[in-house]
Image (cartoon, rainbow, N blue to C red; front, side, top):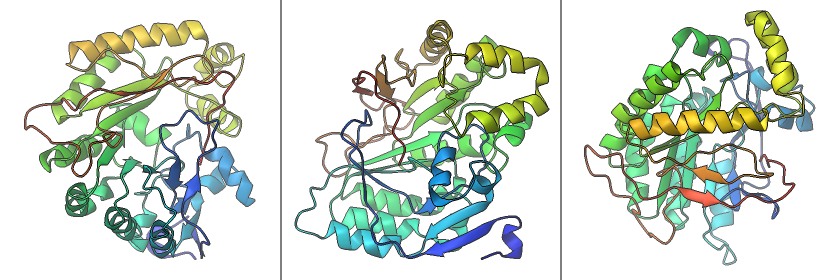
Length: 343
């Protein structure tokens, strides 16, 4: 389906047989279930790690990922049915793990209110990670859900430069709009961790850029921040390197050397970035923990507020105005030789 208000985007409406996706046991992710109401994403982030997953649907990982969006139109009804089964264990369900649940399509299809209500009504704790400011529409629902179950909220924001943001994540709300969304969530008494990923070598990793980013996140009221370097898996690497050659040709050789051994930047670079990030975080009142995003050999740390509070029950997070404290980050031990799992 194509409509004038979504020029260049084709929606493929499908009836889903299931809504809950089981996370493989080998995954390092701190949740066992995910829900993805959409496949493909009009945010069109050049660096998106989920691009390869679109090839499983016989689309390409480049233009098709940005413009061919699969919509599970009955996902809320199917989810409610699955959550009402006696066998359901009320485990944490994560949204936003593959493509953004608040991308532009959500304005048309409005699937998230039904999903939020189904999770809350069944007593299931959940988390949402998004770049989409459309989430503000559902803040009243999320506040109500927080009275029934523990809720985690996360915003993805890794750069402040408007020109760079427009070039590398052209379909997303502006950095300023996402900072405002963090403030709205906090004012509503909801937690809001930030995933400051990816940090782009030689583009967003300077001391000045990192300091400005964490200063802005602290001012907005983020409850915690995790940051890590760009990750270039197959399906993303090709698309990103084409963009880099077009927009920043002088950096192509540097990136080829930095990522010469695979999807991860060199260990030396990651260690340097960890030190720079932790210094900036400490200067702005965040804990010194970092999330390097290499589950083969390192520990993943999710920022406070982004995950439901374990054992907290309903309304597991309480906001104190003027504070960006929200408990401690959630640490996830790495698994040897484990690759990132996408859902």
